[in-house]
Every structure is written in C-alpha cells, then in structure tokens.
Image (cartoon, rainbow, N blue to C red):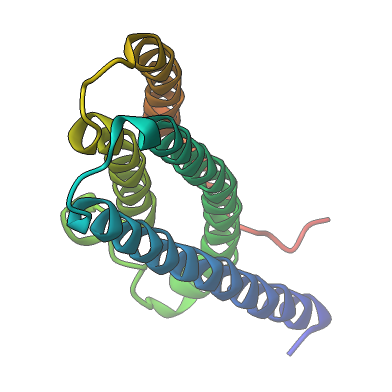
Length: 181
C-alpha cells in the first residue's frame, strides 16, 4: 500500500472517531435536556396551587430554563455543523473506495429525518414547553406587568429558536479526494 493510501486511511479513521465523539455528546445532551425538563414540569404540575406571590419566581425560572436550553441548542447546532463537516470529509475520503470497489454508499436517514432534524425538534419543543409553564400554572391575579415582561422576553426566545430551527447547519458535499496535493 502506498504512503498516500495510508495517510488517507489514517485521516478517515480519525474522522470517524471525531464523528463518534460529536454524536456521543449530542446523544447525552438529547437525553439530559428533556429528562431534566420533564422532571421539573412534573414538580410544577403536581404542586397543588402556586400562589400569586410565587408567580415571579415561576416566570423567572421558566425563562431562565428556556434560555439555558436555547444556549445548549445553539451550541449543539455548532456541534451538528462540525459533525456534518466531518461526515462530508469522510464521504469524500470514502469515495475513492466506493469508486474502485463498488462498495455501497451510506443510506439516507429514514424519511430524511436524521440527527439535525431530531435535535431541532427536541430542543425547540423543550424550549416551548418551558415557556408554557407560567401561563399554565400561575394564577392570573395581579401580575399584569410581570406577564407583559414575560411575554416580551418569551417572544424573543421563540424568535431566536425559530431562526435556529430554520437555519441550515449542513455542510455541502465535498469533491472526492485525489492523490494530488
């Protein structure tokens, strides 16, 4: 085997290791974020009555949790972008093997819903669920100014979430690797 083939093989192996690492981080976060959120939702909904005095705490906590989830979502979008770039690099390296041996290409995700779409759904639903807690569990007594401030902040969070969901993080396909420098 020539030196170029060995270096391409090594780059391919390192790329695959990096893909697994980004996927591992993603899967841990995708399990952690909804689990913690779900447990917190249960605490809010199983309480008998949240008084008007506690409403500001509930509003602030829900907004805080939505913002933390949005921050993790934005970080995870960058992780998806890195993984997409690594996958494109692996595909370009793999192309030489596919062309010469006739090996099959990687299949498309079922219904074209893969990691990117799943994560966008999970994070956006979790953010919306956090933002829905105060209107659902807080009594509507005497907190009109708080409600206006919350709705304004929540609208901004929803707008950034929507922009994040609609934005693309996929890296375009690369040309096949050649032996030329």
